[in-house]
Image 1: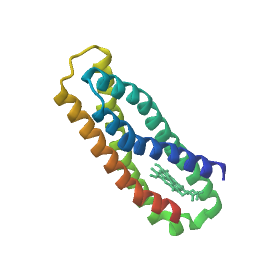
Image 2: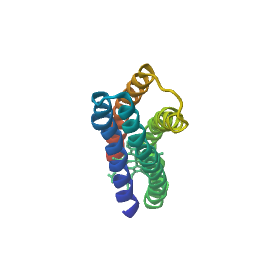
Image 3: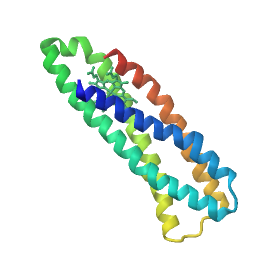
Length: 155
Ligand code: HEM
C-alpha cells in the first residue's frame, strides 16, 4: 500500500516537472531579453529540473519494482495469468519512457548547463535548438506516459 502511494507521489512530481518545463520554463525563456538573461534563466531552471526529473523517475521505477513483489506475494500462482500481459506492455513502454527522459535530462539539459558553466559561447541559434528539442521531448514523454498511466490503473 505504501509503495503504491509512493509510486503515485513520485509520478506526480515527475509529470509535474515535465509539464512545468514545457508550459512554464521554456515559454518564459523564449520571452525574456537580452540573451544573457535567457541563458541564465534556462541554466538555473534546468539545474533544478535535471535532478528532480531523474530522481522522481528513479523513485517511480524503484517503487514500481517493490509493488510487483507485493502483487506477486498476493496473487501467487495466478500472478502471470492475471497481470502478466498488462504488466509486460507497461514495462516495455516504461523502458522507452526512461530512455527519452534520460536523453532529455542528461543528453540535452545537463550538457547545456555544463557548457553554460564553462562560459562557452552559446549563439541564439543553439538556445533555440535546445529549447525546441526540450519542448518536443516533454511532449513525447507526456504522450508516452498516458498509456502507461492507463495500464498502471488497470493492474
Ligand atoms: C519500470 C517501471 C515501473 C514498474 C516496475 C511499475 C510497476 C507498477 C505496479 C506493479 C503497479 C501496481 C501497484 C499496485 O496495484 O499496488 C503500478 C501501478 C501504477 N503505475 Fe507503475 N510501474 C513503473 C513505471 C510507471 C510509470 C513510468 C508510470 C507513469 C508514467 C506508472 C504509472 C502507474 C500508475 C498510474 C499506477 C496505478 C497506481 C495505483 O492504482 O495505485 N508506472 N506500477
